[in-house]
Image (cartoon, rainbow, N blue to C red; front, side, top):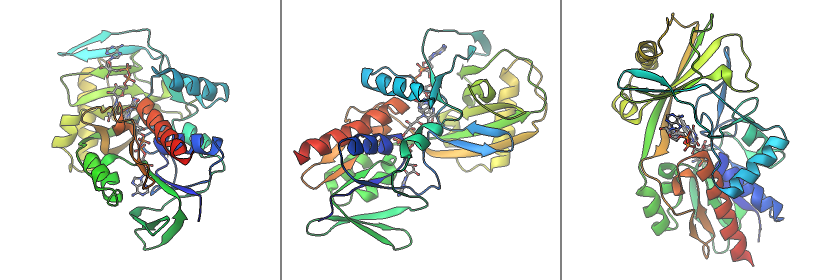
Length: 328
Ligand code: FAD
Ligand code: NAD
């Protein structure tokens, strides 16, 4: 019987599990529907340089995660980002500095998962549609009908709505995943030929279609000639405008940005929009991982914990820990 463990999803949760399992001498095989790793911790290469369209930065409050981040820092995968932080509320923009350490991947967010993938075996561009069990082992099928396996265990490290169908062999776990609502976020990137005349590098936003904006170029190691900005719409605006054409999303969020930023905002030389359908769980959970250790089926991801980068990493560690515990 094969002892290879299948991991579906090469976001931080899947790669955190892979890292822990390979360190313990286990063989893994990874799958991702995308053509690269990172999931929501991804960057887009564009004419305006690389842009962090998903996670903007992360904090490390758990000691284990902080230790991992410090190892990544020593290898040059991450650096601290110390933006000039502002807050926008009730029509007022105010300087809002704090003592929080914030981390970003260098030279782009996706550097972290690219480094974690390293030489691990991955099937990219492979959307798994079914996870099924024979007498002794697991097999996976993709949307093209191709079957992979046998595998001793399977870790599903996708957002909850995508995990539900893959958990059909364990109805209790599927039910728990199905109970997790995930909210969308529209992201827009703008690039300006001339730097905008503002000291703002990051801003938390209330009472606007936007919830966050960042000067992408202010992060360490970012390239590109343009003054690039990433804008995130709030969950409620994103839900209300889920099917709006991208050009209109750009127009409306550019308008909201120009209204609050407090300086002249010309037409951008570059713009793009990206819709994250499953951006964040509506609520945090304390599950850590969903596991049926006797069956050999596990589900992990940010939605099992805090809905943040740290939660994704911790959940992947928890999946690996539970699996290794069962092997002993
Ligand atoms: P994901 O990153 O979603 O990875 C899941 C992977 O599974 C993906 O690569 C996907 O392609 C793959 N996949 C899905 N279905 C299948 C399938 N059927 N077959 C094969 N592969 C599949 N967190 C912070 O801490 N700070 C922030 O500032 C922050 N900002 C954010 C802003 C936005 C717009 C978004 C969207 C998220 C943000 N987050 C932030 C949240 C953070 O990005 C996530 O918590 C974290 O990256 C989730 O990691 P994950 O591995 O659990 O899931
Ligand atoms: P954090 O401590 O920097 O922020 C947590 C929250 O505290 C912020 O959302 C903000 O409301 C508030 N805050 C923090 N510092 C502030 C300051 N100086 N001035 C004013 N308000 C401040 O980071 P975290 O706890 O690691 O959270 C990560 C961030 O990721 C959050 O902002 C969260 O909203 C964001 N996120 C976004 C999505 C999405 O889909 N858009 C998904 C997951 C997480």
